[in-house]
Length: 214
Ligand code: HEM
Image (cartoon, rainbow, N blue to C red; front, side, top):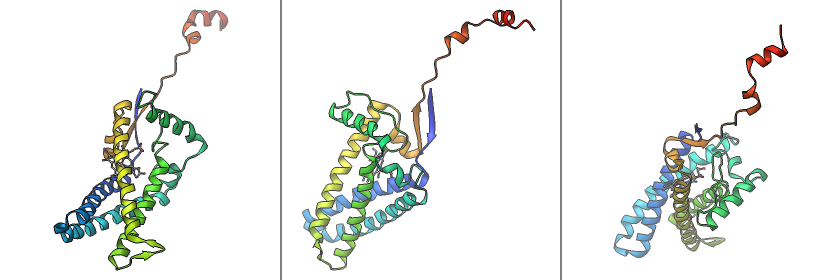
């Protein structure tokens, strides 16, 4: 039996897709700034607009992390726990075997990726802060801000590449429309119907009557 349940709230979905658009745009405009000198100023202007968009989406997402910590959008769902360990192990086996082992079931976040999403929010915040500091003319704050901004951008780029690769693999293997769930909010769960009790089915009304004549 299949059950559709609303998991991803409107604000989480809005944050996800605005974040996707802004982060992809920031990576592209960042690349243009360092690789195509004639586009430097234009790329920088768009880089700033996209940075404000990223800040907006991060604001929504970080707010929902703390507004309702026990919901699917709350920080609690992103922390690994004892009960998520079997799911993490099963996900690792799934990736290492290139999708040959069964995909585990989970409620909201993929158990292996959940803590990585928390790390991503931290990295994106670091990018916004270091980017605005560079824009304000600062070069160093404990570390070289240019090197930090550049290295974290590379890390975020790899994160997105692997994220998209794995959600597509998840969709292909699971067949449960997890990508469209990030659009309409509803995840699909396979609920196993309990087997009917065989002994109960064999009892006839007549035999009950014989034992209880009144
Ligand atoms: C810059 C690009 C992207 C970023 C930064 C990003 C970020 C995230 C984050 C943070 C989550 C966890 C949900 C949350 O707690 O907010 C997530 C989940 C998800 N994303 Fe993305 N995403 C990106 C691109 C994409 C794309 C292009 C797709 C579709 C092809 C996609 C599909 C999904 C799905 C299906 C989930 C749920 C996965 C799960 O945990 O089971 N994402 N993404």
